[in-house]
Amino acid sequence: GAVVSQHPSWVICKSGTSVKIECRSLDFQATTMFWYRQFPKQSLMLMATSNEGSKATYEQGVEKDKFLINHASLTLSTLTVTSAHPEDSSFYICSVGVGNQPQHFGDGTRLSIL
Amino acid sequence: QKEVEQDPGPLSVPEGAIVSLNCTYSNSAFQYFMWYRQYSRKGPELLMYTYSSGNKEDGRFTAQVDKSSKYISLFIRDSQPSDSATYLCAMSAGTGGFKTIFGAGTRLFVKA
Image (cartoon, rainbow over the protein chains, first blue to last red):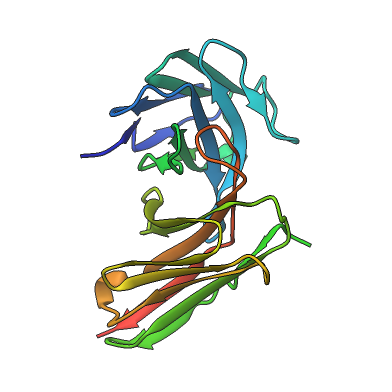
């Protein structure tokens, strides 16, 4: 079965609305989760590292007030894209890093802002 | 210079061919080397990972790491049309909470 569940898989919304994406670790208690963004035909770009019970660590150039991350439990991290605009349209993917294993990824969320 | 270099392709091969995918890197701190396969509109799927230098084989897939040359490879034997996907190399200094750096991904097409 899947190690990481991500929801929703696809969302279309109007410009100016906020969108929440959930990432659940199904098989492990994950103190660390990662959020990536991927544009068409490009590689994954790390946005932030989500730490359970503390503030996320954002990569340079990523607006923390625009991309709100909450990691309130060992199995759930959420990414909220606030006041989304068409340029925020992208493929957002979360991953879980546990113990001595490489990261396992969710199936991604395709976000389309009209 | 990027930390991880990978030719984006596309790479097109006939069914049954041996495929060779490669990456180079510059950070000598990398200890874990991964290959992920990504189908269109899906998240990356971990194929193989190797700690430090050496070879690892899993069915039709073989991963090689040469830390002295900072060069890693993935070989696919008897390639199938279902292998058509984007292959991403990835590296990190550790596992768990360590950051992973990804290559650009190589798009592979296996023709029936």
